[in-house]
Image (cartoon, rainbow, N blue to C red):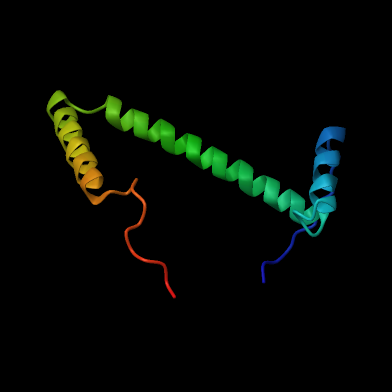
Length: 96
């Protein structure tokens, strides 16, 4: 089990209301768990933004030849995925 740490702080009224509404709506068992969930969401958003920045930097730093290779790979993967029919309904019969 994860060790809990004590946190004592003052927060804005809107944040306080949000945390309590998470508990009231049974999205969290306690205010502490609501804080954990809110921080987890914030960390995911931050990680996603960081990945976007890194991806942009990668593509902006490619040589013209490497960019052309990336485009060729993207086209090949797109064509292959279309052939597999990911967007089509499943053709298998439902399990009985």
